[in-house]
Image 1 (spheres, rainbow, N blue to C red):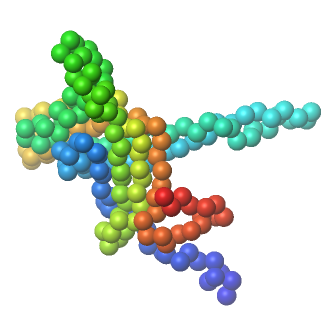
Image 2: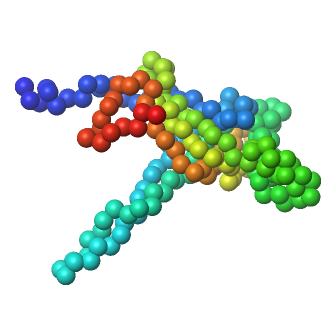
Image 3: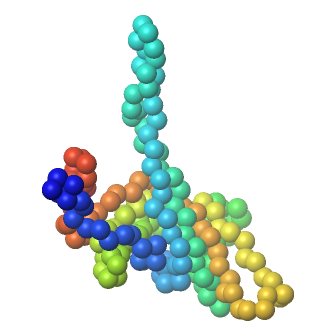
Length: 185
C-alpha cells in the first residue's frame, strides 16, 4: 500500500517537441524556431575549513548557462538579418551602426525579454521560462551545399546571454517539489 502512495500524481513524460519560443521585437525568428534549450543553472561553492577537513558549502553566486535556439532561415533571410542587425547594433563595428546604436539606446532595443513556453502532451501551455534582458552573442554561419539530394532547409543557431530566467507554472498543478516552493509568478 505504501508503494502506491509514493507514486507521482502525473506519470506523463515531457515531450521534446512541445514548446514555443517568443522573442519580443523579433517576430521572424520566433515563427521559424525549431529547437531551444532551458539553460542549466549552477551555484559555486565556498570552502569551509574545520580542524579536520575543509568542506564545501553553497556559495552565493548563481550562474546561468547561455540560451541557444535553432531556426529555419526564411527565403528572404529576414529572420537571420534580425539577429545579424541586432549584433551589429550592439557591437558598433562601423560608423553607420553608431547612429543605429544611439537610436537603439534611446529606444531600449539592445536587450529584450523572451519566453520559452513548455507544452503538455495535449499541446497546452504548462510552464513559461521567462528570460530577462536577453541579447545575442553569436550567430552561426549559413551553410550551402549543392550536392544534397533532398532539400534540407537552411538553419542557423543563435546563442543569447541574459540577466536571469524565471520559472512560471501556468497550470498551478504543482505547489511543491521535494519540499521547496515552486515559483509561480
